[in-house]
Image (tube, rainbow, N blue to C red; front, side):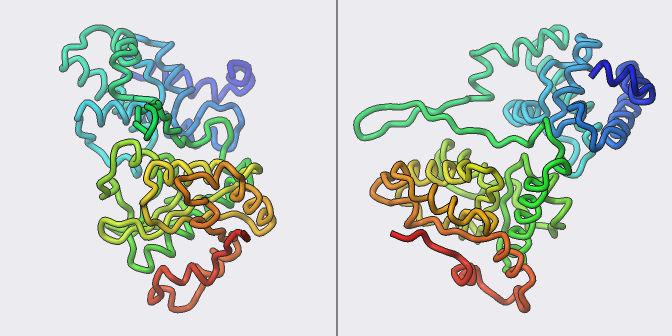
Length: 340
């Protein structure tokens, strides 16, 4: 990355301006400029969570910049501390998010008695006893015979590859947006993972109230954190109508694992589950969904409760006439079931 700063004088000068700027508003504007200038480049400088840029800021001045470098971690900490965001996260520029969250956490933790430099504050945040409070990486649950620790994988936006670099990721986001549009036009509320929202909302324009900020569900924390990672959820009032995992990976596995986790945690939950993938991957989907490990879920084989939708079916459905007057049951006309 330093070699690129040396070869690209304009990029290096812009980065130097960001590091040296003291005015918060001007620093935020320069960061937004950097994201625009650097778009499409493969230097990993301007990732979705701001990791690389925040690392540079913390290294340049560790007394004013937190080494809590991930925007995802910053938002989790802000929520944990009960701080009020003075801006709308998903619609605010990344520059403003980076600058403002740095200030909020430094001031908020100091007010809570965690005094010292920004570096001291950062060390405290990742001190294991405190980290376990705001960023637990496992939850203990009790089964019939033993107690086990369960990890809920957090879905994060790709840092190392821009969406435009990978046609499969780009296509999967378009399908995710179409599923959100279909549900909203049917009068349903929509849930999208927080890590996907910014990108999906560039392709689907949600009206006021259509996209939920929190899930109105009464489940335990572990179940809720699992549900929150599902690609698209349709809800009616306080009930999940349908849940969709949009698969673009070669393995066709991550979405199935998330569905299986949900069924294992809530075996009596009655939710219509769907794996969405290109028609070219139909055989792979059914091969994976019929794995023996997915047949041992509290007597409910995943293949019996999770159906398959092609990308092509989603495109047909979003273009259907009178979609606004159809109910969610129309999905059954397009869904395919695994053979016994």
